[in-house]
Amino acid sequence: MRVNNLKNNDINIDIAEALRYLGYKSKEIDDETYKSLNESVAELQEISELKYVYRIIDINKKVDNYISFAEEINIKSHDLANLFKNCDKAAVLATTIGFEVEKRIRYYGMTNLSKSIVFDACAAAYIEALCDYIEEEIRELAAKEGCSITYRYSPGYGDVPLFHQAEILRALNAEKLIGLSALDTSLLVPRKSVTAFIGFNKTNEIYKKSCLDCTFYNNCSFTREGGKPCAKYAR
Image (cartoon, rainbow, N blue to C red; front, side, top):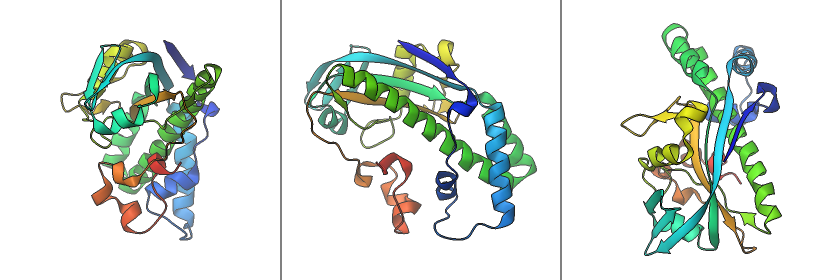
């Protein structure tokens, strides 16, 4: 089990990523939006609590689109079973940027809607950057075992139901270790949080993400407008 709290300035917030969440492409940013972006980044790096936990767990079964992680997390999923077909183990992770961010988003939602939208986009870019950081750490662990890694795959993508988030949190003791829990609706609290699987791949096969695998494909503004895919499928 690996648990870590990072310093807020250990992770950079990608302004370009935040702008994509806001729907900007090549449009010039007005001064007010640019100022709000920079203020939001500074505020996030002051109030966030960057926490994560992960375990490397054996994959026990991959039969008939059924995959079991150490008998603790059991998922019926063609997508995940196919992604992990060359994997005997996987990293199971949970991460969050903290409750203060959640409180600030709610506050701005009541007092300054335009600021709330910008702040939310910056927070989304922040948690994505934190996930990338964790993924690189896991990549190094896998390399020591002679493995590459698959891309990360979260409940809610493809055919993996969102309710498996609760199983991940229990397997990681995430509520106690990093203060992350799930509602009865399976949404995470704090909201700017992520759970995911990353397989330890024993072959040199390269796995590419496809927008077609995403639950939100039919309603995605990025693909509908012909732009670059969202962060989940950009690599």
